[in-house]
Amino acid sequence: DAASEALCVVGDYPTLTALAEKPLHYARCFEDKLNTYSNLVRALSSSGKCDECINTSVSVLSQLGEFIPTNITHEIYFDEVAKVRQALIGLSRQDLLSLPVMTDFNKLTAMRFLNHMLLVTYASNPAMNPIVVFRMLRMTVEFGVCSISAIAFSCYGAWLASSLNDDYDVAFTMGRVASDLMKKLGSVEILPRVHAVVYGMINI
Image (cartoon, rainbow, N blue to C red; front, top):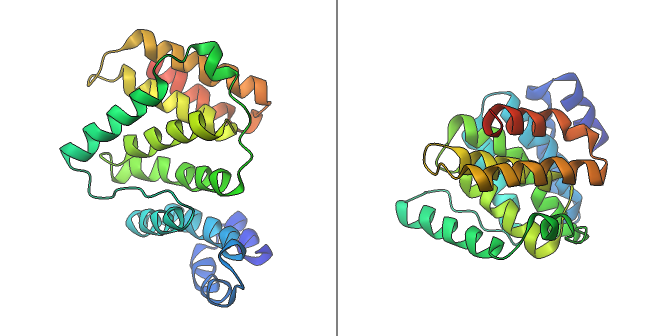
């Protein structure tokens, strides 16, 4: 773990990818593989190996109990839209800000891998990108909030504000939830990403 983390920090992605094979093979259990997998998908993303990054993340997520479709048909897309809208029905801005903190280890880890997928799918698989956002929102409502939830709310707001939807009122509310939740949790490390989406895609 320490070696893969160091290689990820210095940007030696080829060595990290090669090095990851041994700990993934010899790890005693799946949980022991998670940090190596996390560093590996970051390396694959930074190396432009987007499909491999997505496939690895989807595989890890399935073992964490979150099954993400990869072949996004119209039926799958609209089914996922319906599910996220159903999850949010009747929840006000204050309700969302009052959700409990996420504590389940598997769900927190799943949110981390979904977060890895956000930028990759945005750039290389745009049909899959909203599916990732929807899943993050549904997990937040069901299992509680974490810092990544703020990113999810901002991205959902951007999706609502897009030309596909033009739902600016709700989009603006989601942007406020994202900013307020980030402040509530003290998650300063995600401020650039949240502000880039809120002020670049929603409040424009």
